[in-house]
Length: 173
Image (cartoon, rainbow, N blue to C red):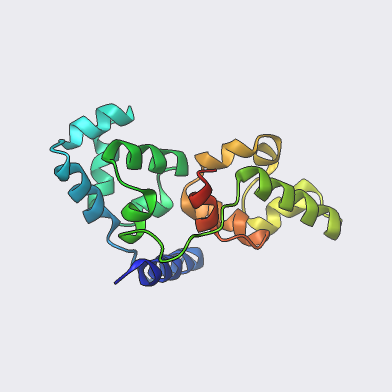
């Protein structure tokens, strides 16, 4: 599988996760990629965890569960780990780089679009938060806080404003 197929697999898995039923989502093999990148550098799990400033158990989970990179750790941590492991975020998530450049959308642009959508629809912050499924106030006040969300949470906000979450990843926020 290539980038496009693995990106589609990730999206399907995130949709399954949104449904919150008994179906087990199948994510791209991110856990194996974390392990291979770490081993390629000759690092132990403890080495990576120390550089990441997190407990070894947090890092260990990333090498054990493919879903952890999508629905547990923050986007900021994912980018930090990609730097530590000397690979791109796209390599960790999808096994390589996109076949063509991905547009870049900043957190600031996502917030601008949220505000615009609220204004167009006459929605309060609370109403928009309810529609999105995430309390938005803190992100509207400081767009960089979106980097604290896992991909699954970032995706919910991006969907509300017709932005692909991968475009936010490509911009680095």
